[in-house]
Structure formats: C-alpha cells, structure tokens
Amino acid sequence: MIRKLFIVLLLLFVTLEEAEKSLISFLNIGKTETLFFTKTEETIIVRSSYKEKWPNSSYLFVLSEDPKVLQVVDVTKISLDVTNFTINLVTVEEGETNLTIQLWDSEGKQERLIEEIKNVKVKVLKQRKNNPFQAAMHFDRNILMLILPMILLNKCAFGCKIELQVLQTVWKRPLPVILGAVTQFFLMPFCGFLLTQILALPEAQAFGFVMTCTCPGGGGGYLFSLLLDGDITLAILMTCISTFLALIMMPVNSYIYSTMLGLSGTFHIPFSKVMSTLLFILTPISVGIIIKRRIPEKANFLERIIRPVSFILMSLGIYLTFRMGLMFLKTINLEVLLLSLLVPALGLLFGYSFAKICMLPLPVCKTVALESGILNSFLALAIIQLSFSQPQADIASVAPFTVAMCSGCEMLLILLVYKAKKTWLLTIEDKRKKNPLV
Image (cartoon, rainbow, N blue to C red; front, side):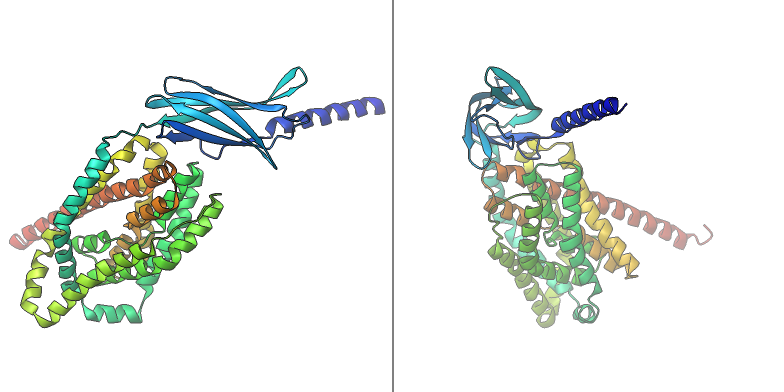
C-alpha cells in the first residue's frame, strides 16, 4: 500500500513538473504581436532565458509566412549574461504577413523544440521618395502661415471677452481649476495606461496614448466653451494654468509610465515648446484685455466677429488634423480607434461629473469638462518625436494624431447636437409667446 502510494506521488510530481515546464516562457520579444516595418532592412532582437546544458546547443528558427512581403536573411546568437538572438529581415513589398519563431535545443544528435511563438503579425509600410504625406505637411504649413493672423486676431478677441470679476472669483474659489488639473494630470494618464494594458497595445503605442492623456488643455477648450455657452474667462485661465503645470507634470508622468511600461531611454520634454505655447496664448489675449480697457469700440467689434472666426478656425483645425493624420491611418487597428474615441470622451465625462458633484454652475461644469477632454495632443507628438527613433516614433505618434482626429469629430457632433437642441427650444419658446394657449 505504501509502495503504491509512493509510485502515485512520484508520477504526480513528474506530471506537475512537466506541466510547469510547458507553462514556462523562455522567449521575449516584448508585449506586442504586431510589428510595423518601414525600411528595406529590419532587425528584431529576441531575448532567451533558456539555460543550456551544452554550450551553444540552443538555436532559433524563424519562418516568414509570405516571403513576397518579408524574408529572413539570418539569425545571429549573442550569449552574455542572457542569450540574445538577432533576426535580420528584408522587406520586399507592402503587405501583411506572420512570423513563426521556434527555440530549439540540440543535445548531441537529438533535437528538441523548447518553445514556439506563432502568428507574430508584421505590417510592411514602404517609404516612398515622393511621400504624399510630406507634400501635405508642406502644404499645411503654408495654410498655417496664411491663417496665423486670423488665429492671433481670434485670441485677441477672446481677450476682449475676459471679465476681471470672474478672475477674482476664481482666485478666491479655485475649485474648477483644481478639478481640471487633477483630471488632466492624474486621472487621465492613469486611465490611459490602464486601457492600453487591457487592450494589450505595443509599449511604444501605449506610451503615446499615456503622453497624450497627460497633455494640458488645448486652445480648442476655450473655443468650444464660447460655442457651447461655457465660461470663457475660466476656460482661458484653465488652459494657461494647465500649460504651465505641464512643465512639471509631463516629465513626472513620462518617467513614471515609461518605467511601468518597461521603456528605457531618455525622454525629452519640449520645455521651449510648452513655454512658446503659453506665450502664444497669453500675448494676444493680454492685448485684447488692454483694447477692452482703452478702446471699447474696437473691443465691441472684436466681440462681434469672434463666433464666426472661431467656427472657421475650428473647421480648418479639424481639416488640417485629418490631413496630417492620413499617414497613420494605415497602422490604425480597432483597439487604437476605440481608445482614441474613449480618451476625449472620458475626459469630458470625468470633468463634467466632478464639477456637477461639487454643485458648480452649468457654464462652469461645461468648461471643466471641455478643458479636461480637449487636449493639446501635439505636445505629446513633440515628446515622442524627440524621444524615439524611427520607426518606433511613427508607431507611438499614432496616438496623438488619432486622439486629435476623434476629439475633433466628437466635439463637432456635440456642437451640432447642442445647436440643434437650442434652436428647437427657441422655436418652441417663440411659438408659446405668439400663442400662449399652446
């Protein structure tokens, strides 16, 4: 009886040991299962933690499903503290294919498969000499130079709308500003990180979304505050304060979340760009405040044109964002699109909910929501381009562009619904005035 029990335990121990071995993963190529290649020659580094019984007994076998898209040139093994395999690849034409990576061990004449990774998806995007995106960028710069005077005029007009009494009230009761800052620099980055992990996005792409979520409010915040009847003075103040806080919070968040994502390297924060953004907002707005105090008749004219000019600039901004984002549409999958739609929507929801819980007035609730949901995505783009090498920078840059595009579409839809509802309510009110019995 004891002998049988011993045999059963021994078999159970051996079975559990074999099962444990089958669960161990020795190969590491990162979390991503999708690789984007843009150059003719590409390299993948695979790290192996497998402990060899014989020197140089392990080797890597790599197979491309479609050689017309991607071909394997050779695999080089480097053994130091850990074993790295360098896979050299050549891209042939644009398309998609899958890689199969196998780790083998040859002990004497026997060969044993240690681990296999199947369906590593690869997308090949060939770079062209006459890149239409570069031509579009050049064209868009020319448009930006043409509309720059209109942008400055619009900001100056916003300065004429500022009420100094509101500034004094916010100074005494800074709750809306605090709610916006907490949402922008603490809650949104954490939600962005959490969602990228749930959707299992590549590390570089995940970092792009986190950096987009930690950006300060953009100029669109106070533009939509005007069009949606929010508090314009508060919106401008929140944009300026969040841009100033970004000098501190963006480096902090980039360090925290890059460490959590396992990304190494030096991340460059464009302090000069942040400061120039701040000055670009403050200078014309300050001029508008001076005009309102010194030349009231000019201020009245600027206040009359602010709505049509703002609507024109909003339309141009959405067009230019889509024009600049065309290059990245090829790399967008369903997960990226879903997250790009969620990021601005969550910012709007969090900002409005917190302001409503604190029983703030409706215009203030709208403003906090808009400042939390409309982000200056192009600051995130600047950080990514300064911190990553190609093609990793292109992968990470998908996030700010798609968020900017989705944010523009969502805000345009909200504006159309709001204006339609407002027109409908005014029509009903006019009918009631004309016919009180209705």
